[in-house]
Amino acid sequence: YALESSLCGAAVHHGILHDHFGGEVTLRKVTWSNHYVGSRRNGVTSLDSNSYSRSFVLEVIKILAVSCTTKASDILDNTFTVICPENCLRTNPLDGVVGTRIYADSSEICKAAIHFGSITEAGGVVTVRKMGKTSYFTGTEMNGIQSESMDGKPHISFVFG
Image 1 (tube, rainbow, N blue to C red):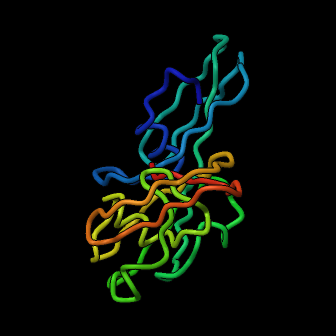
Image 2 (cartoon, one colour):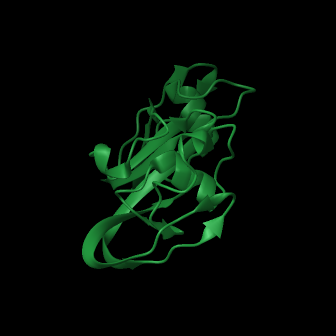
C-alpha cells in the first residue's frame, strides 16, 4: 500500500480488520514503489497508481499465551505481544521483576507489566520491545510489586509499548 493510504482502510482491504470492529495492526515501511495495482476486497476498493511513493505492508500481530513466570529471555523475538493470565501476583509479588520502566530480560513479563501499570492483576495484553544491554536497573515498589535493583553484569533490557 502507498504510504498516503488510509491505514484502517488498508487493514480492512487486507482482511486483518473487519468493518465496524477495531483492532491492532502492525505497519512496516518498505521501499519506494512507482506502481500499485488496485483491487476490491472485503468491501474496500484500492486504486491503481503510478505515482512514486513510500510503501507499507501490514502484518498480523500474533499474540503469545504466556504463564505468570515466563521471562522475556524465554522468547527469542525482539518485539512480541503476549497475553498474561490473571492472578500473577499470587505467584509471589516480591520476586521476579528487576528494574523500573526499563526491565532486565530475566524479569517475569506479566509481573513487570503489572509493576509498570500496563495491565492489572486481571491479566491482559502487552507488547514487549527488547532493547540493548543495560548494566544498572533500579528497583521500586509500584502497583503492589517490589522490583529489584541490579548493578554490574549487563543484561538485555526491555520496555513495554
